[in-house]
Length: 317
Ligand code: SAM
Ligand code: SF4
Image (cartoon, rainbow, N blue to C red; front, side):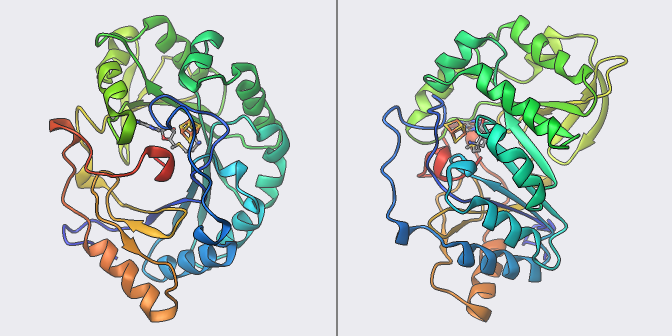
């Protein structure tokens, strides 16, 4: 279905938990978040019902996210249910990768067609610092496990983090070099000021153009949804630049978001939320339709802060 600005909404990002086993500085408070009561988060069945209603309005792609979706109890049941909804042709999942040794093969069997793995650096000390204690080797083993399980198209999402407006060139180059492995794509995402960690994010923000300065041999190739796509000469994988701050891509936004506690967010950066909890049948479809029609034309984080009242872990990115 189209929103009020002619955008065709085909993509639902579903956060299945706001809990996580890491504490990335731009996303989560240091002390983590209070665990919601089981009854306060959507059940597996409610998630299936919402996805089916969204599919009836033209959604074809669902991305499961979080928090860390792989810490959600019943995640494989959720994957099976969502991927079986008529009309859903793509069920993807975004993860920090640390639990993929256990989950990669079952996720594939449960209908996940693509994985995005978040990895901001290949330097173990910096990874530990950014994630507040995570082990890079565990995340990299997760990437290897995904390959072994047959995910032969992997996107690595890297948030660009600098200091005083400068990002380490070696770090950018090392990530770009990953695209020399077949089926490995790297996407750099600009750090967004959102939630309690806004000040940290603002002080570490670097424009995505830093990637092109660090790796001048990158050649522009294409546009893919919200990303501008480049390639290293001879490398099979692509490098995507997603620049929500320096160049907002709102005119091509085709997504809505649902949080683990059952609120539809028409826009990542607006405070508006529409309750879906307790709704069934036509009432549920009507609420989703209202959410699509409530999508604002654009966000305004380029000129200030996000309007969202939630931290990123409670939205899903
Ligand atoms: N835990 C999973 C992961 O890290 O991939 C899924 C949830 S995480 C919230 C989804 C994506 O949002 C990650 O790629 C993460 O790097 C990104 N993210 C979180 N906070 C962000 C921020 N302030 N600015 C830009 N991206 C952010
Ligand atoms: Fe957890 Fe992902 Fe947020 Fe990092 S970005 S704290 S891995 S939810």
